[in-house]
Image 1 (cartoon, rainbow, N blue to C red):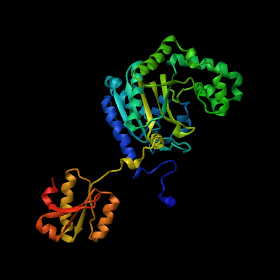
Image 2: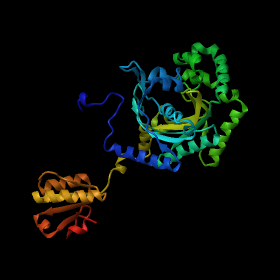
Image 3: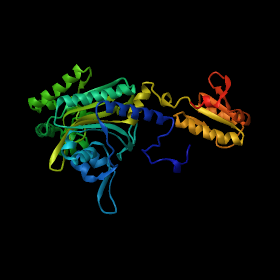
Image 4: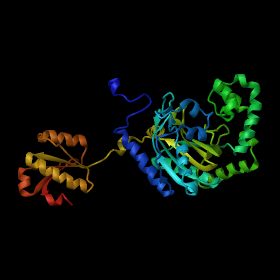
Length: 412
């Protein structure tokens, strides 16, 4: 076991070969798909003003109260490592004025939450996310969910479930909160400690509490949409019907709330059985974030790469399947061949050929062993005799055959 001094901080991981090959596949296919939907990549700072998250996520959320890495710097400024991607993205887009209010962007970046590490949940985690700003539109919400489903398919992930609900408008949420408090007050003492606090600060979160007693109580409550306007109910119905027309299956889940205050109307979550009790791999929804003089409306989602990988592996998709294949290994017999092969390697690499060689004089046996470990398709062998004739010996590693050919036939 490695010495403690060489380990990263608890809840944070070094990402290296071979697992990095699976990460690359996920990122590359995401970028390709996002491009086809007209999304541009955005990279915001990992460190933001604390107010960016307090004003957008909400003071009473678990993220702000329990999970953020927040501190004061030497200038006595209140800062935080970003715990999620939407707030910083909207901070940037709002600063662009009208242009930013009708944008499509995506991000692939590390986020940070100071919570107890568990399966699929790290203190440094890496979401893939999109944000599409614009006036509320159920068709935009449906398209965003369809995009997320397309992304799962592009990665080869099967067996996931999309659950959907509505939080209604801000006005609906006030009425929902009033009614829920009134209904829950007689059983307040039966709720868990967190939900007793949520009763006053963020009562909607009582509905999706995982505590068994709280779940039983929540199941007796009327559905949130029973307190919404007909317009809000129609909005959700249009999202679901549009997805059905597009061939995207979703399940209505009355208990789905999502934990951030900026959500309005459509919210959804994607789950996968490979993750056990903490089975969410992704979430998203429509939101309105107040930054500056007016709110910025939009819709988006985020899905953690770590949890996606766990689910992919359950589907039989592993990092080794995406490891670099083939390539060429140069074997140098003598000092002159070593220099000549360095020149040859440079030319092959300039052509995009994956090419390796030893940079110190070693026996042919040692160099061939290294070629085998690298899993190359062919080995090119050169010594003084081959240099004098302008030839190389090419060995096919799969067949074991070899032939001598002109050097110019190697450099296409």
